[in-house]
Image 1: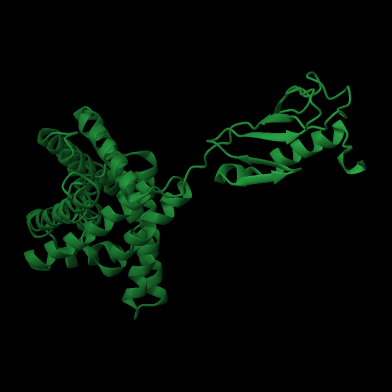
Image 2: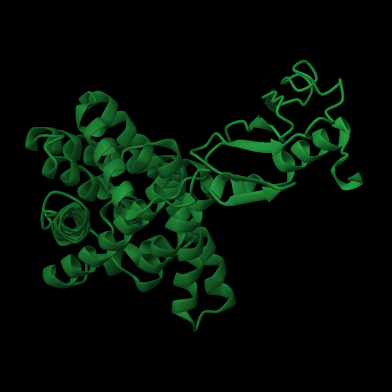
Length: 361
């Protein structure tokens, strides 16, 4: 009948429509029906059979016309049949790229963290130290911006200290963003990542100690370098925020300071974990911003941040001695940061996603 008299041009239009209009169905493995043809998708490469007209195939619909050159991107292979029945034409669809997820699953992120931490432990000590200097500089410049913002807010809203700390919290994460995207060595983040590699047998205790010592000392030196640079600029002259911060940070008891440090680095390591789980730069930045903003706004204690804030205050005239700085703040804060990262992120996540957890049956 007239309904079965399709031209070769119509057949080409059908095949083009299938390849251009149905990529999602192809990727999802659905059953596609078009022009009386049904094709299940097998893997990422699809084959579809389309009917040809029995006894009515024009001469132009031959092997040459139905070759892959006739329809760009589609390979057609006719199967002639002389018995008067409809014969299939095979359509080979090209492979479609698998999209990268915006966020890795926790189990996948854990394996990525283990791999990254193992590489950190295998790196030469000098490389870790230089990476630590850069991380100290990045964190310190975030602190530099934070005290500038806090000083401006103090004159605007002097009776709202929490709002001033929130202003600091909103800008301080710029430093950790620079650390994360540059691959620098931050001691506090490594207190969570490196133990994961040790638990999984990808790093040794010696490698862990090498990483922590080199990163910590590099962070300290980078922070002090930024203190010296800021003093030369004179940009904090008249800014009382660093002085007030330095004096407040050495005024608490050992236990109070250490507890604040545990919570602080739990949040910092969660920021590092979330950034590691994201697959794009915007995703990494957004993921880490919240936890860092939280610990600054709350008023918790972070050892690498204090490597800048307290010496900055001391350089500007704060009544803090070197022994007070080291014993009343850096010692309890460093211990608390190790507990927060090592126990509540590194060990906890190894139990949830790694070898410390229950074995699968």
